[in-house]
Image (cartoon, rainbow, N blue to C red; front, side, top):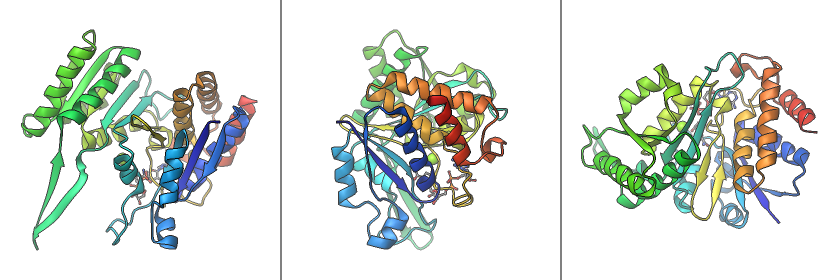
Length: 332
Ligand code: NAI
Ligand code: MG
């Protein structure tokens, strides 16, 4: 029996994940769900933001759907972001972040981009420290092994898409670490999928082109931090964080999650856009073999948006519950 592990977390995570779980009921695919605690509230209640029982559940279930968690901006002793920890613990080395045009006025047309973000290294190893009371150092790790495995995933995705792969790097400044990233990705893709057209761009120029000519991009592969930033830019071109899904993929586990955070500014108001979480569920369903249901879900979401039913972040007036109701009606 396939089981989906639901990890709502904090803020709007606890709104969009239960909402998305209702879609799963409507689709009636015979999938089980389990709900497990994670995040800041869990930390305040139990002293642990990522309980062992939650990790065990994710490992036991086929896939997990994560909402978002809050992190206090100044940090808190003993607290660290559960999703960052999960990416490390479960070796979820590839973060797939698609950005596709949406049928809303806040989205540009003709955009179909997949950002493949390295998910375990770079600056996100969080190896930073004070060297004296006025100075800090943050280390950044790039390894050949991680570059090779992210390159293979990016190549596979490019093969399934339009066959163009752009490598984001800053090897003119970070000649050693970004040099290793660029060269390893290029060599791996050349060997693994020689038919793919490889392009490489300095990440700042790429950010510019992403805004100016987004229709020219197919797959972009990037080290962790660049991929994080580029994917938020890409999401802004198609309607914003409320419609940006993602998948954290490893060899043995996968966690799907909307790109957005816990959005404390709108939490509890009933207006969180559930589309990013629902599209994340769609990615999960495709990956566990429910392609038809995933396609049906994507079509229903598009139809709902086309009919003018959308939340305030997209310029609409509908609530989370109204989106759910409309999507459910289209699915049944
Ligand atoms: P955020 O993504 O939560 O919000 C940024 C802006 O986008 C806000 O104005 C918010 O209202 C809006 N927004 C985001 N998702 C939306 C949705 N589904 N519907 C409508 N509007 C939406 O990022 P922010 O404000 O930087 O961080 C807030 C908290 O979330 C922080 O504690 C941060 O650490 C955490 N965070 C957690 C993430 C995760 O768990 N994966 C990722 C990013 C941030
Ligand atoms: Mg981000």
